[in-house]
Length: 162
Image (cartoon, rainbow, N blue to C red; front, side, top):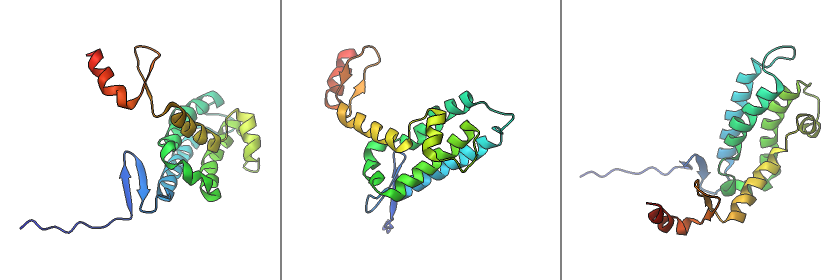
């Protein structure tokens, strides 16, 4: 009666991470970097060399908005960063905002921009986020205290709090 054909898809977006059938995360990295590039170009309209947003405001926007977008789900797709082309794609996104923060020319190297702006290279931040997740074992922090709660213990701890 209600027979419907379910189409086979090449990619799937789950919890904000785009996965493909080979788990290369190419589409996820492309999507996130394009989204961040659009945000940077929107900010570029208000961050000119002689006027507009200052370095501190741009750094706050980068750290709170753009960086969190780029790092989201890093423990899942960290293996994709082993490929040079994905690492370069992510670095290009950071380079754009670093140029705006430093109010520098586009010919300045990314390493110099990171030093001038005081920002850690993005691929290092992504590796740091993934290692932190692995180190903590996927733990979450209890807001009431500084104790760590493992996910398997979360249910019993939640019952104790209630």
